[in-house]
Length: 392
Image (tube, rainbow, N blue to C red):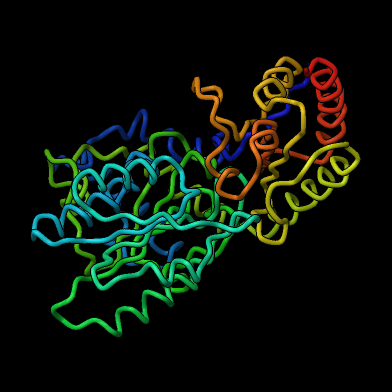
């Protein structure tokens, strides 16, 4: 039985070119980048070269790239770091995010609320796109941070980051030197493969991304922090990463991350065209199903994500039965965690529970091809029919 992996938004296979680049730093070149002997200096040189590559990819300065363990740590450093800075100054502050963020942002915002920050969660429209006018009305004189993901991980909805940066630019022009600073952070974890990420083009002050979503290993990521942003470290114990992230550098992971973004910079256009073709074929085949809905609008979506709801067919059951056929997808429902609550993203988009519980996500990647569409559709149709016959 041939396996089909349609869950690339969860994690990606390490590209063989990335693996080849990192292997020497797991074996022969194993030094600690913090050591002053030749082993350490070789490792440090690799880290410096990787930082340069990543910085160029994002249009940033070398010292604006902070290597982390992944997107969750990067998000925590960005959000907590800003809030902690102003809390230390005994400043009353206001922070804003959207209702469809990844838990790695939403849960940090909830924690910041417990620490005394005022928090607003902005609604999205039926396509999953943030309501920019609502955001505009929520910005206050003491708003210090707006954090909005660049593209949603469940439905692929692309957010208006450039428009948000313009709002912040206008807000800055109204503030005096005695007012608080205001920053824009975006979690670009799902976007790096497919969307423009030049930080000046976007107008962001901080940007998060993760290696295992771009064909590098798990356990490595980075945070772009624009020079001058007021931020405090959230972990302590070393001077690494310009004093903002203590801990021994993950040299093999850092080297791999740089190779991964280098490949994207060369192959992005071709890869997007390929994935659009597969997605279009999937969409056409899925259109033949009864009682289903696409969640999100294709023209406002990443080229690799399809989120579909099936009436009277529970998402977790679809996932498990497909897995038995060797096909990997994911579900937008939180049932796997023991909760009967539907996806917070689909709920924010206005989907009724009976539709949200029947949602699944197909996320394509570099190693997928059009030949996988037919067997997937065949298995999916049999499973949906089976579940609907069993449904009360």
